[in-house]
Image (tube, rainbow over all chains, first blue to last red; front, top):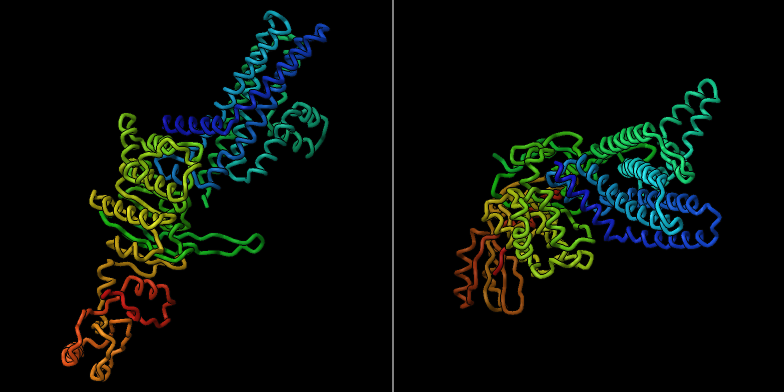
Length: 258
Length: 319
């Protein structure tokens, strides 16, 4: 079982690499180099803030685009091209296929983020000439970004298990945007009354809370991230991801592959 | 134990957006295929052949009924480790090379790591692709992809192999090679279940065939039995272009082609016809009983139940 999931994940990763998905790293490297040089020249003691803000936001956006645009095809493309037929006619259970696909894309994003993180730290080193104690919070921010990717990948996979690629992309992107304002949505729910309050609260807790996973601004201002928040966010992301994958499996287990 | 046992398997789709209608892709199908058989599943396009195969592979779910392969349920991974499947017009991960694809499928099928590489080489050789294992599949022709499809179906040495239109996209040489391969699989004791609408392939290969049309099983039987029924007529062939009057008097239907004449007449008049030819000093080439060809049987089974068909109207034997 585990080995089959690993083989499917490994093949998904290989597909992403061969489809030149990691070429985005070149664009990212160019972006970080340009930012570091420009910020270095206009130094007014905000180099670190700008590099961290720009770098982590770029990591987040690049990863989000990859998660959505690869994620939407993970299942639907396999059905459309009928590559799934020769996989599911083997001793591979449908849930193993879904989980393998998830880990394949999550692995791709993790590798991508790892190289981007190196880019961010190189740029930081370039503008600051040395690492500082508070730079370790950048690692925490990167960890939270990876947690966001896990949730987004699982959600995209869920949509991909029953919807067309275009609609999956729209759903996933909408949820990413709404989820980035989840705290505001919860605040809005608190201000309403009656049935609206119930509905707004339900919606606020249903959408993924990406805003809680975004600590880029505070990290850029060298503010520490509490251990409790790391624990809470980790648990939240894992539970949300697991639920989305379970949803994808439930749908896919009963789907006729026409 | 039957290799494949299908009990009332049925598939109905709801079509239409507003007012849903039922479309019967497969009406209750009962079929049994014994181990070691080459079984042909015949029918025109859209008859329900691929639907049946998809149901057996667990790619779609039946509306009713059940099936067992090698005595196991369709969702049993132990069963799936013992079957191979070639889909119709297969498409594979085109970013992989043929060897990588087969390695991947070998991993999924549980082929031991130490045997995998040699198995991949063996099947690539067996399907006539020994030199292109390192080429990406996106550079393969349709026929080559079909061969890769056959390779992946037999890679893990399955006991039952399902081929959906295995000759599709192959040139005459390729078709011959696939026929040889299927015969070889039978020699190895495998069960081969294949769908086709090419009757000559089925007639040449199959122990038994089933005919399906409009989602309904129309007939099933051994090829030898289906093609051996004699209709009390013989075909007499002789050299020349002359048709003796005495032969016409026997009620023979004659067709003259260049330097031979073929006459079809009642089996009871066979001796009289031969005697007539001898009297006219015409050289007799052959006397053959007219048998039902698989094509006759197939066409008969494709007709609605109350339609009348001239079985044996077309001579299936050769001079």
